[in-house]
Image (cartoon, rainbow, N blue to C red; front, side, top):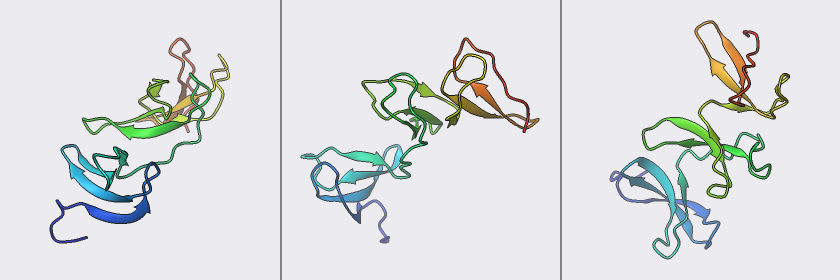
Length: 131
């Protein structure tokens, strides 16, 4: 990295949309990766991009749940087919079926007593035993 960190830093990776080089840039909400061909190409992603959790979205059954960060810095998990599918959860998802309602996703919740899995379906009150 150079001394002037406000300048875009080349990453040596081609843009998936236009094949120009991706750059590490600084914006009003922190660091992000954007295409060097902006404004002709508007591709961008988070600087700490996580390819996903390998949990299939229970709403659309096509996308996967990926970790994202809100503008307030909080992590959440949303379907990567947004805006067609707007499913999201605030806790880390686990690809396990709920034993009570058969919902395909459980959420990992940390408590003072330990870690447990809870059902992502709002109408179900399943909670696993403490680990």
